[in-house]
Amino acid sequence: MDVYSYETSKSEEEMDVRKGPWTEEEDSLLKAYVNIHGEGRWNSVARLSGLRRTGKSCRLRWLNYMRPEIKRGNISLEEQLLILELHSRWGNRWSKIAQHLPGRTDNEIKNYWRTRVQKQAKQLKCDVNSKQFKDAMRYVWIPRLIEQIRASSQSTSGQPSTISSVTTESGSVQVDPRLLPELSGTSSDSQVSDLTDCYNPQSVSNYPNNLRNESGLAGTWGRDELEEQSNGWLGGGGGGGDSSMETVWNEENIWFLQQQLHDEE
DNA sequence: AAGCACCCCAACCGCTTTGCC
DNA sequence: AGGCAAAGCGGTTGGGGTGCT
Image (cartoon, rainbow, N blue to C red; front, side, top):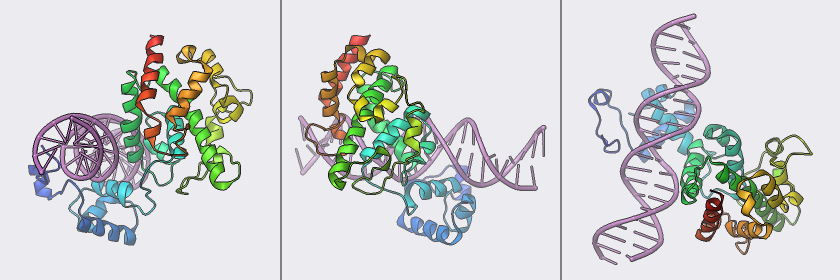
């Protein structure tokens, strides 16, 4: 059955439940109701607001689209970094990840992951959960994102900044200072696999060595190659702080990574 | 200009978790 | 403790927009 056709099944017809895209009128009804009665009790919202929607549908519409704090537009470098980091830690716990990205919804993050990150894993002919792909994120993309954020932050503020207090051009994302150290591990003399290395500028410059020790992927990568590639991925060679993923996921770099991965097989 | 392919994301579904009686 | 309803969550779908031929 086509759920977007506004046709309803027999049981739904009896309940007169509406499906498909929301109209402006429905949005207004929902907004008015929530403004008066607040969030929660979504089945009541559906019943009492005059909307012919399920409570579930009302909740989803409000949380993913109508909340005033919802942020729209490109995912910033900081947000990309957080998503990569948090996903490496928690996996597909989208709502948990979303809690650390103010204004972003779990749905949006999930979509981002699927359309951008998983797609690249596919192009690399490796599983998004494979060690190779995780290593690529962990030792290349994440460190480069951090460098990129630092660079853009310094250029806009004129002052050095720590990763935990970076503010984007959009001004809307603050990286939770408590979060990244936690993610980075707790030991100051961390192991090579510890992400602390990634947050240490000096260590970042040494990550190919870490890779050789820790990652199967790294064995074939030289330091210069790796840095050159990661520059390209993040547009570091001239992108000038472009937060678009287009600069990260370009064909040349995908091809290069494919070569590395196949060498490992 | 038309057709096609691809991508993004809003919205759905089914399952799980939580809260209440 | 058990049952039920509501809320929350993650996976999936498909419409619409856009770029390419």
